[in-house]
Length: 326
Image (cartoon, rainbow, N blue to C red; front, side):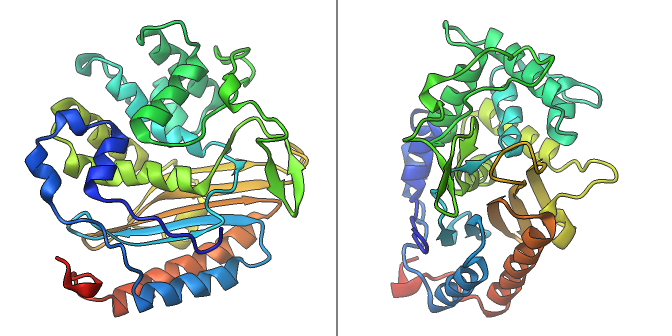
């Protein structure tokens, strides 16, 4: 599916986020995302296709301009399933804030939510999942409730099968919708692997699209506050640690990476990173997933992606899309 490009209108974005009934219909009449690939965007896509050729990686790469319109959307094998590692934790804050009374938010240092997002604590991740699940009606278990949120409110296609980290309160819970089966496998070098928690780069990039543009589109005060708080938490950096994207783009990044060491899975080392890179009034969304690759290889590719941001910024067209549509 190399080179596949899908573009979202504001109406589609709002419908996916589940906000249509909460937003004034007049707000939906704004400009749409660009639905034509400019020659500049095409050249960047074709270059990145050569960069990722032969590498066990998938990419979803987007630019959101200062008017909150998507200017380009580059996808390279972006719908392939890959182990998600800890990248999914980027949506724990939104899940928590939307299902917790504002005066009960606990997100400061040493709280489970802070530790899960900033320090990637796996036990605290289970604590947050279990805690929020208790506040949501219904008989579904904590994994199922979180996945339903990811699907219905965020618009992702995939979810967790389990979160069986030792000493986490989510041990033993599974979501049969995402059970690894011969029809739901991670394929690397044409070899299939059964992996409990597999997402796509498209899932991650779409999730950041919601975080990046949601505060602009939302008219429901509680949702706006939850999105804003999520972005603030994701922007906090762990002392003495840099994600792969941070290593090549140290300023203006917020996001969440995930790494599984060699030996955890038979397909080799997993290195993922996804987030938002701010350049002036624009936001670039990068979601890169890799399996059987090392950090050096991932950083080499991310360096090329960041270089393409500079190429686009220097040569980008005016804010009038191809064909003159405002």
